[in-house]
Image (cartoon, rainbow over all chains, first blue to last red; front, side):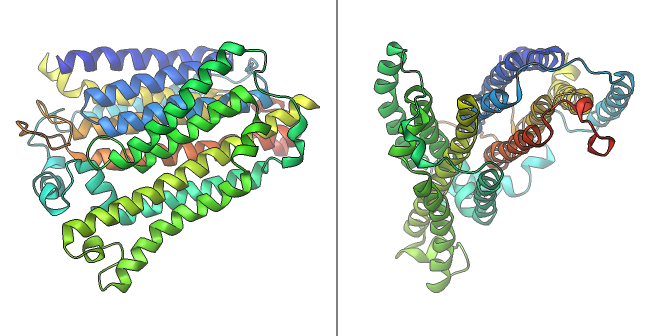
Length: 325
Length: 118
């Protein structure tokens, strides 16, 4: 049954990708890409990667669609007909694809438990991590503890990307608060948004603090919370949103998250352990792991939330300034 | 039939990868190129998650009565890659916005000076 669902979903994904190539209306392309993200989230659920599916649904279908739409608002929605020859690109792609297909025949068969990828560290993560770390969700254990150093790097990349976008586009200025924006004539949207925004934030907090036990964690929670504020900004206008959560505050928060993460590492350093070795943070190793994981997931959540939201602010304020001119 | 199921995921991954690659080199519009890059990226995600799947396994969250779990390691790698991916996509889109501002177009063949052509 799993294989059958897999066959159908992957075929739909391939069809969507072909649609993206041939469509000239970029608005439709971005919407198709949103569908593409939802389809890949479904595939991830089917392949047992629930945490990944969660992230893909929130990030791919939520944040990146909004960012691409605000880019289209600035650059125009039609792709012009090109005078490129399509023969050469097609030849290169077909040749590369054929070589890769030939390469896949040497891959280990899909789903076989004897595959090399399941033989090394994975075995230890599955057998020992529930006792060693004390958490049922192995993905969180590996993400926050065994590969904590890696995750610190990823959080720093998200932070750096936010700085990059802000220096390219600039932050919204607060004195423009008088300008009208948002969807003020859409009463239904406003009422519905008011009802669901608190629920989204509540859900984000649940995902943040329940991520040790079920699917979820700092990355997903940060993105979901940012999506709630983005919805608020879309419906009630950017100036109102920037008054609730000021851009300067977001800059501080983005740095604070990375600081909490790295600070946990330094704290374990001073308590006699290695960098990011949580065992020394409490009286026994398992309790120490718990404290460490909660702290660094909090750091990740804060940074991802602040970074995603300030990226959105930067794009949205550019688009609004263009509308005024 | 078994042969197809064993390799089907990898073939779709290659197809998506090439669809993304083709969009990147053949599309005229810079936003569409970025969508192509994203499709390429997602194909790599699917490759990793497919490799982590164990037939008859379950999601890697400990529960009573479950003995076979899928491999959690690819999940961790891809989970963080997705969030980093959207952050870097945002940087790419920001560059597109600045290119539009500086050159007045995001279509590859419309840049006026030869030196500006990508």
